[in-house]
Length: 113
Length: 113
Image 1 (cartoon, rainbow over the protein chains, first blue to last red):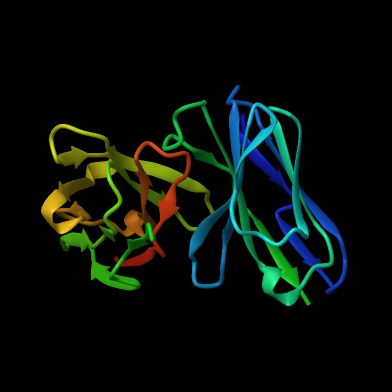
Image 2: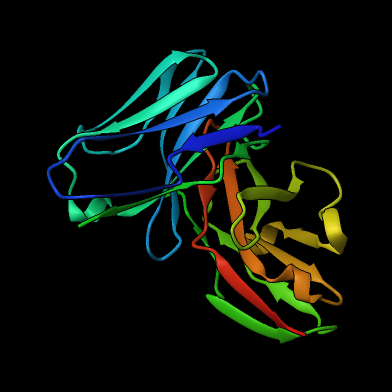
C-alpha cells in the first residue's frame, strides 16, 4: 500500500550519462513535487506540478526536466549528469491547496562517478 | 530571502532527557510552520504543524512546538526522549500561503539507550 513510490532506490552512473527517476502516487493527489537533498541534508524544492502543469520551477539547470504523463506520475529526467548532481532526490505529493500536507517518497540516492 | 535555519546540526541525548530543537525563520509575512521527521531508512513524515490559533502545537509521539512570533521561532520539544526518536528532524515554512515548503537544514538527533 505504498503511497508515494520512487524507482530506483539507488542509482550509480557515470558523468555525462542521461538517467530518469520515476515517481508514482496512489493517493489521488493533484500536486506532485521533486526535492533535492544534498550531502549536508539540506532539502530544497526543484519542481512542482499541479494536474500535470508546472507551477514551481526553482533555479535548476535545464539538464533537469520533469515530465508528468498523468497526475499520478511525475518523472525526473536528468541529462549530461555531473558530479554535483549526486544527492538524494525525493518525490512528494499533496492535495491541491494543501502544500504542507505533503507525503514523501522513500528517496532515490543518485551517485555520479 | 525567505529561509529557515536550524541551529543544532547534531544533538546527542540519553533516554529520558528533555529535548528542544531550535528553528528560526526569516520574516516574510504570514507563515505556516511545520516539523517533519525522517527515521533511519524511512521517508519524511509530518510531525506537527501550525497555521493559527494556539501557538503551542501538539503533534504525534509526544512532540510539541511553540510558535513565538516576536522571535520568529518554532522550536520543537519533547519532555522525555526515547531511543526510537533517533531520526533527522526538519523544520519547514510556507510564506503567505505560498505554494512551496522551505526547509531548514535538518537536525540529527541520536538518543542513547
